[in-house]
Image (cartoon, rainbow, N blue to C red):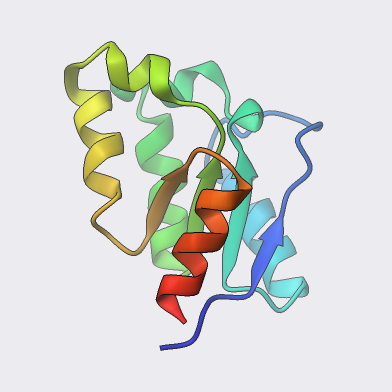
Length: 116
């Protein structure tokens, strides 16, 4: 298995709040020859963290459909510690291949090394 080539999105920029934003990131990844996008948690719209809005599902589904791994980097501990469906979903993504939540660059590098 080969480690993915990643496209890292800058922390400053417009929030990712829906399908079109996801498609823009996927297009940028394809343009960079990448098969994974590293997205700082700061770029996620607040609605992403309220599952009932459907934003997280819509964004993630676009990445899955286009077979681009979404790697969200940053501190989501407050969301996990709050419990509930979002916390469960964040934990469960750690077992999959399509979406990762990583705390920092060191954790990202370890996970990437483990896939290659």
